[in-house]
Image 1 (spheres, rainbow, N blue to C red):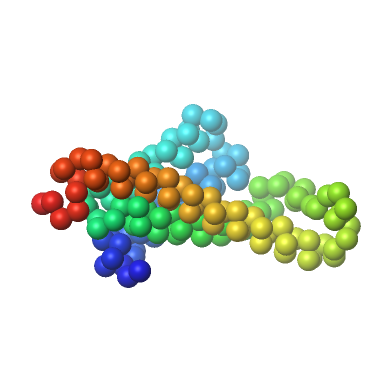
Image 2 (image 1 turned 180 degrees about the horizontal axis):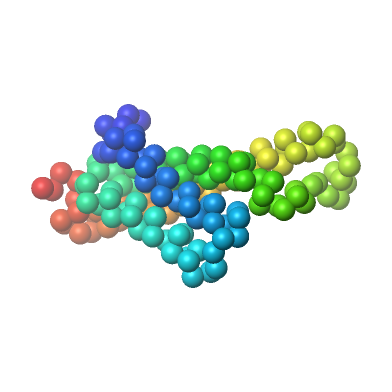
Length: 149
């Protein structure tokens, strides 16, 4: 889908997604407590929703799914960059029947790939959940409907 179909420029989609990166950094480096972490979780997604409703995009669900996808990519990249610091020199390893079955390099690559995939799925899930809320609100509240200026 083109940026025009999203109702926001691509840079705005990425910019909204980037609002979630400080939480990733704060979480991976254990920089904040639960209260600040909660703010870093919920304020960005509230901003996502507010912007999409304010701009009256054609389909809030699709737009926020795109924001979530971009967030997932940024989440995955940030986790990769902070991998060593996040695990304090004790990175995860495969266990059970898979323990020691792969070379350390292949095991690390596999774990990092699954972590990146997990981040992408998390971003998509958050985008879908917020998008569903946005879609419902844009349909229920007359002043938030697309094209209702």
